[in-house]
Amino acid sequence: MENLEGLFEQVPELVVTYGMKILLAIVIFVIGKYLSGLAKKITCKLLLKRKIDETVVSFVGNMAWALVFVFTIVATLGQIGVQTASLVAVIGAAGLAVGLALQGSLSNFASGVLMVLFRPCRVGDYVEAAGIAGTVNEITIFSTKLLTPDNKLIIAPNSAMMDGTIINYSAMDTRRVDLVIGVSYDANLADVRKILTQIVENNQYVLKDPAYTIAVAELADSSVNFVVRPWVKGSDYWPAHFELLEQIKIALDEANIGIPYPQMDLYLKETPAA
Image 1 (cartoon, helix red, strand yellow):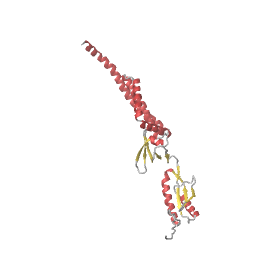
Image 2 (spheres, one colour):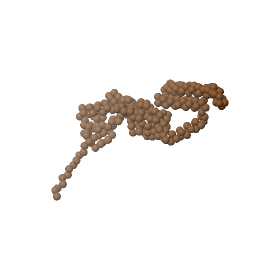
Image 3 (cartoon, one colour):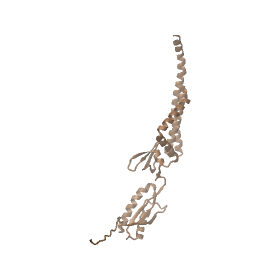
Image 4 (tube, one colour):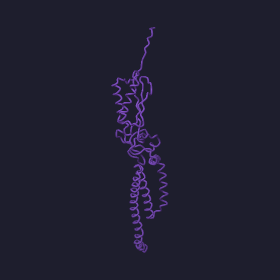
């Protein structure tokens, strides 16, 4: 009974001591959570003022939030009385085990960091990578989302994107349209060149600088092949490509210049009957 009475006598002191610790821990957690969101907001705001790419802004903002939040958790547990040094060691060991089990995910994470730092492509760029092509819709920590021209969403792992060749069709302001036009061997090459030149010079998408190229490229099996290589804005590539092909076909038909089909001449030799 005496021990029980002594325990009851210590209850108010224990409540005051540990109650204050728990209350302070809750206050630290709430303030830390607020500061983590504030750190993300301020970081994103500062980066946007400097006109940093949105992908980098989002990634760095999330990292700032994670760092402050982890520090908050450690401080909260330390206030309660948890030995944080031992906790950090346990988390480190657990992190190593999880890291070995999730090597692919960590590889995607590392590739995501590299994509954010070196920026081989940005949101809105049309790229070809990992055997797929599309417009970059979003770059996350573990994957990249591409939107195809026919409106399909493709989610590619960042490691697959970074391990191969990335062709960025939107990186430069201008692109060259490469067309091969085959005409009959009977056609007058000077007339063909004149028609092609008029079409290129009058096309609404073709730029004056850099200069275009029109030349005989090959004497093929059934046609004389011209190369037509005008320069256009990157955003006008496909409209220019389709329009030039249509205009060239119409103009050659009006000039009675044939675009031959692939053909082969066969010579039959008669052999006397046995």
